[in-house]
Image 1 (tube, helix red, strand yellow):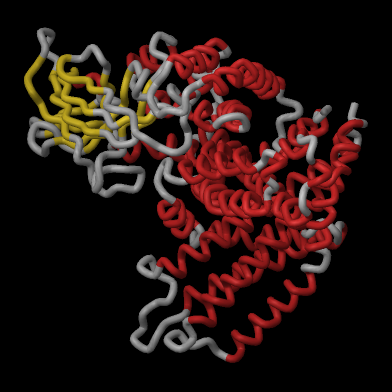
Image 2: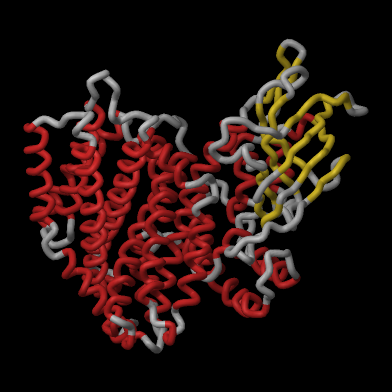
Length: 585
């Protein structure tokens, strides 16, 4: 079936229609994945590294898909996002393998010495790397408070350079089966070495470079994951970013946390997109299915929810990727873009990893096994659940979002967004903008009330220790940010009325209406539960109750048409999509 309209719409939504570099990269990734598909079918269902997996990696390498990050001198996140998206639509494990250089190279590119950047990023001599951060429980992870891996001075080389003894055990480390270098997080012993650092390790270093046994997992079969062990002696020049000497001890110029911060910010946006790709590729499969017209009505309605959620997750993820690129080029990392990136990237991952598995699970429950959809849906669901653990579990993303969302400057900007949406809603009353604005206003008002609520002893209702409150509000905010991203992208598509994809604007308007209605309803439920549910210990005044009821009434009035939009999407999936697609240019 001709699905050019699908690409045309997303080119506009994701703001890549006029970027030849991104379109060419997507084309290369698509061609590579066509060559990969036969190997996926032939490969044994094992977690071990096999010949077929090596061939897949060679195909990605031939198209430059393992060096996307290293090849971009400026704004590298969007190109990497585009390549990851295209590969994840086919197989998430393959997409993960394409990151084999990127994640390890990011700290070196951002903070490394000139010699380090030349060898591990620019030259292309060493293509595949691994970032060894996570350790056996209760060791280091993206959210760990300490590192068990150690570095200590062990003498000097023949040219007088200090030598380091590195002891590091890794857990669930990607790309280790074929990594040509490893970037490991370690802590100084406190005497000759102080502070934490990232240190570059190579297989040829003196000592033991044990790649580890493959980790057995249900999903991401084409990814490489092991539990490695390193007992190596390396020169101090391998400390990423260099070191200095203070009071007779070597001190890294950058802690491992400072080195990883920009990399993890990018990766959260990318992993959010990797999960979002499952939702939209599942919907796209429905258009290609010969059983499209025979799907049960409940399955089509579930698919409508999945489609709207996937579009919202994709819009938020690409928005976060663009913010990361803006931040890369900014001199002031405390700018507004920096604040937005700090909240949008974890929000993109949190929204994708929490909402998309839920929608996939619901769709799988209603799927017709005779249509051949059940196996694919369950496989994607398993992959999505595995991705939830990459770069730290959802609790870490919730903690980051809940900390950033109370920033006074962010809340002031959030209030401006509400006003802008209300202004747009007056001229475009049927695109769900008023529903979204009402949901955002209710969330903002409730957050302010929650932050003021205290019990008889003066204890705060909204505090870090009460994660049942802070995390729930963070989840609600992520949904609102995703729905807003989609709504603004759809509006942008409607403004470009001369583009050929405008003939499909109505279905994407319906998707935006559904995403806005669903997320506003969820936010409303969260706000009511938190503000009124603790009323025995944290009293709510009658004035606040009346204000809450008024805000809820406004939201209820704006919800008109949300379920009608859902049914129109389901009808499109029943067969109208096939008819429209067949007439595409």
